[in-house]
Length: 126
Image (cartoon, rainbow, N blue to C red; front, side, top):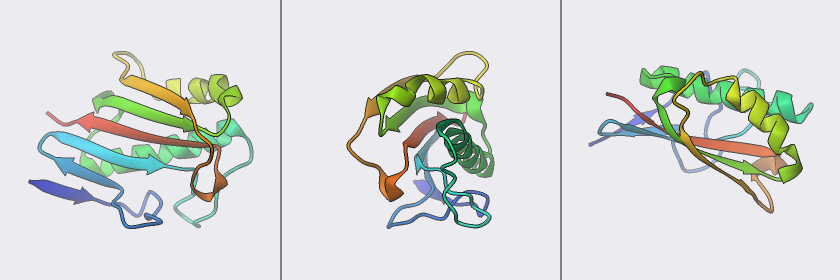
């Protein structure tokens, strides 16, 4: 059985998908980009600010599902330019304390709305 998770505190989907889907004890979050949910505007000031908005959007969906960053078991980071890895990693790392999730980071040719970073996560809700 699956349950659709949506919150107004994260950007509305820009296509035919949900913010997240709970399937059993697993929560699958769609990739988040740096859209400010309060005004729908992209936050592209610099890569750290952009990444922070992405992580805050993830946080909002996690909260709606009743979990937090400690529940994340896997992340996927998509970067338009791998030169931004260190700065993205710095912001990303601030959201975790220990028992870090598994992760891959890949450079891609392009991302939705021409953003620089997109992050998706999978969490486990005991």
